[in-house]
Length: 350
Ligand code: SF4
Image (tube, rainbow, N blue to C red; front, side, top):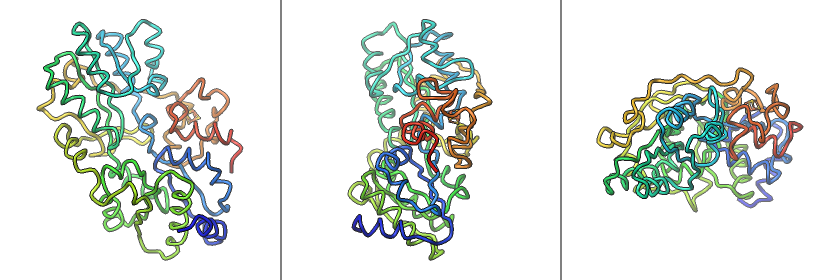
């Protein structure tokens, strides 16, 4: 569909109010950045979803990582965003200020290298993410096993999307499915959502033309009142997905229940290491107790992630909670909804 045609369909929509959930945090940011929100008529509402891995990571996970760093003397390796996510008592950045060995890495394999070069360190990589990044954590585990390292492990909080779609299906009339995730999983999951759950959605990419086309398809198809799925990102998302990556995930990890920040436990929506790889499981290796984290009572990340409120409806948005001093995870990550609203709207949008 041509961009001008897509724009015309969107801007001339006068039907009943429709709610579209941007599952992916990068979609939220790109829609803001490209000014697409300014084109939307009042009766098309975009709501942010749970597709930012840092945002949905449970508070207790940060507490576990802090415990590994401060009490068990481990070297924690993580992607940068996670360091500033508040835990119950402190963030990993604050643990580092207290003397913990917390390092930012760009790839899980970097953490394996640190373990290999420093046999006296007990290195733990914080494995957070969806189907997109889980394969590289699995690669790191396989590499550590191949090298015979006994000082490398993963603390897992990996999550998968299909069960989350089901849990959130009443929150929106249609999903903008995350293109990066579907590049790995393929489109079967979206077709199942359509056929078995009656959920409509469109998978799309991240350019203005891809996003506008996807929105126009939703606007055009919703009034037909028949569940639909359209792949608007065929240059990247193939029906079969990335089989090698999926096989690797299935080889190293198995499904488990997972807690999503603010949403609660979604059965079958997480991944943990298979028994065969239990020597790389930090929870087992360091006998971590079960930790129930507590988020700041003022933080409404859960309501934001479910699409129940807009970030600026949180009382501390932009006042106490800013990207420099985040109170909740959604203000930390580049993919977080609160961060997007702060960066592009300052609370004045809508
Ligand atoms: S503005 Fe801050 S405290 Fe409020 S929901 Fe967002 S991240 Fe949480």
